[in-house]
Amino acid sequence: MTGLKEEILEILSEDARTPVEKMAIMLGRPEAEITQAISELEQDLIILKYSAHINREKADHDLVEAVIEVRVTPQRDRGFASIARRIYNFEEVRAVYLMSGGYDLQVQVEGHSLREVAFFVAEKLSTIEGVLSTATHFVLKKYKADGVIMDDEVDERLVISP
Amino acid sequence: MSMESKVTERVRNMPPSGIRKFFDIVQEMEDAISLGVGEPDFVTPWGMREAAIYALEQGKTQYTSNWGDFRLREAIARYMRTRFSLNYDPHQQILVTVGGSEGIDLAMRAFISPGDEVLIPDPSYVSYAPGVTLAMGTPIAVRTYAEHGFSLQPEDLEAAITERSRILVLPYPNNPTGGIMRREDLERIAPVIMRHDLLVISDEIYAELYYGEGRHVSIAELPGMQERTILLSGMSKCMAMTGWRVGYACGPKELIAAMLKIHQYVIMCAPIMGQMAALEGLVSEMDNGFREISRMRRAYNRRRRIMHHGFNSMGLPCFEPLGAFYCFPCIQSTGMSSEEFCQHLLREEKVAVVPGTAFGESGEGYVRASYAASQEKITEALQRIARFVEKHIQ
Image (cartoon, rainbow over all chains, first blue to last red; front, top):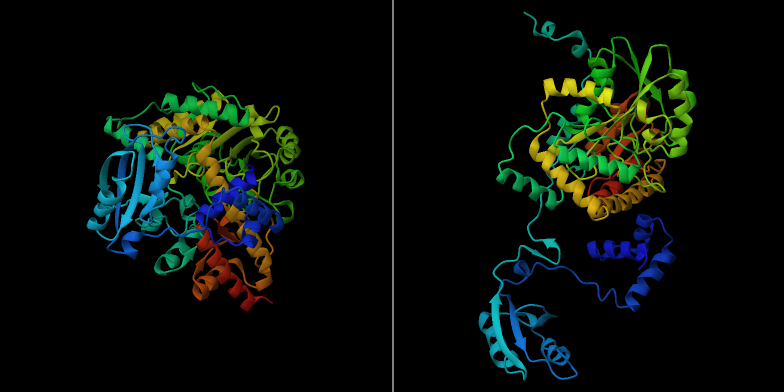
C-alpha cells in the first residue's frame, strides 16, 4: 500500500468525516488523487464502512455486552468458517474472531438485559452443532475501545509558552 | 532600603518576557483557544512513562553521573550516528542537561568573556539574548527575512560581524518562524563562520520536526564544522517530554568538559527519572524505525498544511514553514502592530497567538501561531481569525 493511502487511512480513522478538500490540503496533493485513492481503498475492501464510535454506556443505559469463549469442533474441509458463519449471522453478534489458545472462537454479543444475552447463549449459541462449550463473560466497564479512551483527557499545558 | 538596588543592573535591565504579560491575560479568559503554546499537545508515549514508573519502583531516585547515565549517553551517540551521521564519544563528548535550556545557559557561560559579541538570528527563541547578557556578553541580532524563509543569509551574517564576534547561535528548525536551513544554506554560511573563527551553538531541539525533503542536516555534519560546533538538543519536542527536562549537548571534548565543570557545580545531574524515560524512548524508537516520532510528525505535518493554507487564504501572507510547529504569518495588512493584533484578536475572537516582537525586533509585523493543537481547535481558530482579519484588513 502506498504512503498516501496509509496516511488517508490514518486521517479517516481519526475523523471519517474529513472532507476530501481538507485532506488535499493536509496532504499537499490534488483532490482527484485523494478521491481516486479512497475509491481504491473502498473497492479493495480495505475501508469497509464509515461509522461513528459510540459510547454505548451513555447512549443506552440498558445495554449489556458480553464476550463468549466458544470451543467448537472444526468441520472437515470447511474448518471453522462455516460454524463461525452460523454464529456471526445472528443480529446480537457484534464480532467473531478465531483465536489461538484455550478456546476457538471469541464471540462478542450485545443485548438489552442479562436475561436476553443468557437466553441467546443457552438457546441459540450452544445448540449449534459442533459447539462443544461456551463461557460467557459480561463486560462491566469499558476504559478504552477501538483505540479510543473513554474518559476525556484534559489539556493541562500552560496556555502560552515560549 | 530600596529592594530594587539589591538586584544587579544586568538583571534589572533585562526586559520581562514578552510572553509573560500575554500569558496573564489569556489565563483569565475562559474558552479562549490558544495557539500560543510552545510545546507538543501529545502526551509522552506511554512506554516511556511506564519506564519511568518502573525506575521509581526499582528505587532509582539517586544522582546519576554528572555527565548523565552512561546508557543514555550511549543511546544519544547511537542516535547521532544513525540519524545524522555524526560521531560523538559517549565518554567525553556528550553531556545530559536539564532540558535544552540548561545547555544554552552552560554554553553561554562557558564560552563568553565579558564584552564578547554573540550573533543571534532574529527573530528567535526568547532565551538566547538574556543568556548572553547574563554571561556578560553582548547579543547582536542578525535580521532574517520572510523572503528567505527566515534562514540566515551569509551576507547578513558577514555584515553583523566585528572583531569582537565570538559565537553564532544557530537555532534551526526555528522557533518562532518555522524556518529551516538546508544543507546548501548551511554550506553558504560555513565559510563565513570559518573565516571569522566563530564557535557555533547549534540549537537543534526541533530537528525531528522537519517537513522538507530528506532530513534535517546539522551544521556539525559539514566538513570542518564539528570541531567548532556545540550541538544542543533534547527530548522535549520530538518525544513530547517537555516537563521531564532532559536535553543534551554534544561537541568537542574540551568544550564539553568546560560545560560539565559548570553543570557539576550548579546542577549535579539531570533528574534520573527523566533520564530513564528518555533512554527507553530513544532506544525503542531506534529499534522500531522511529514509529512514534513519525506518527507525531505526520500529524503535525497535516496541521501545518491546514494552518499555512488557512493564513494565506484569509489574506495574511505566510511563507511555508518547514520545521518545528509554528506558522509565522505577516499581519501588516491589518495596519496593526503585532502586539495590537494579538490583543484585539484575543478580546474580539478569543484566540491567543503570540506577537512576533516577543522573539526580537524583526518579529514586528508578524505573529506566531502554534499548530501543536488539535485539528478541531486549529480549524475553529482559523475561522475566528479569518473573521477578525476581514473586519480589520485595510
